[in-house]
Figure 1: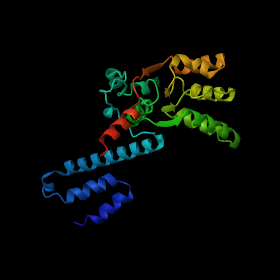
Figure 2: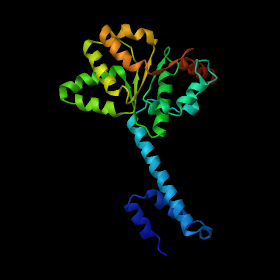
Figure 3: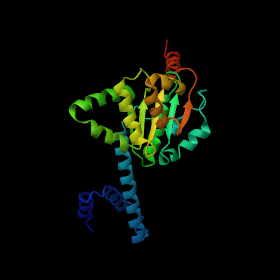
Figure 4: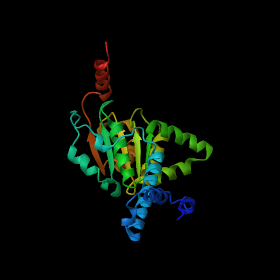
Length: 251
């Protein structure tokens, strides 16, 4: 039986997983011991797996995560105040399904951004969409978007993203325009999407940083009150890595 026309047709139909599995089956010496139904089942399973992998790759590419991080790679030996039980609970991604937020605070270098990316990566693996953004750069982009007409589209994109990472929250005091933009973002997401914010400042300092008391109340009400809070401690992981590197270099 000529198999190449069938492989070509599967490729044309974009059944690449089935095409690869069929080619592999034809090179298996004991393939005839399987029934037609069993072979077909294997082909379908491969196609489903291939499509799931492509969708995951697409979600991760659109997420633009800063770090290629995974929760399974967390090093709990370092005394950073990480609660293993909490992390394992968050790994289920129920917080995404329940539209809850996560706030990660702590000094520079303790792994806030890495942990945020690991949580978002897990969400992508569970079928959710994610997007990593540095808050200072996002606020600048929103100001530009107002001038070139992209503002409504940008807000819509942020609103439909299931997990939005706002990294480097609180590097500078917000302007009046930035406060309004941030409120628009969080208002669209409140109760329907999950936001993950990281900051060097403790949460109780955020109100003063936002500035206007009324808008600060509105912003934090939509972000803080339905959020898991993770406060990391300890020395900078970057400093520790630098020490390890220097001690392992040949003299």
